[in-house]
Length: 106
Image (cartoon, rainbow, N blue to C red; front, top):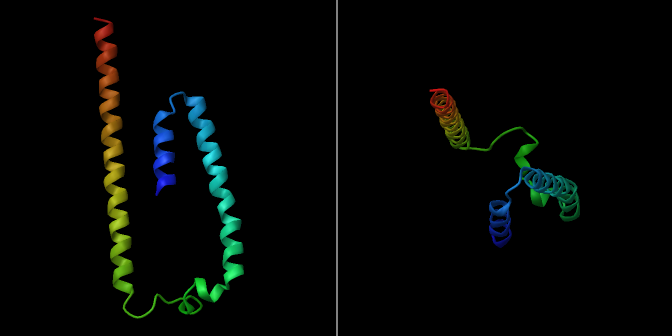
């Protein structure tokens, strides 16, 4: 939790685009390094302790179909809502830029 707060506070202080790009690249590399770490942790502690047994059958288990479907539906709805907000934001930015451009030439 403290690491997340420190990362967010550092990200808020980043001002230049080059510095932001450098921070994002370093953060991405650190995230990519976590992949082999997870692989070796699973191998170290035994795969059976880390994963449920029913994954080999391809089943979610009894009674998990509806919760999975509802979670998937909620994720799709959240994505659609955020996408609609993004389009609205970009439409407003374009309208504001056009209004500023029109005001300059008057």
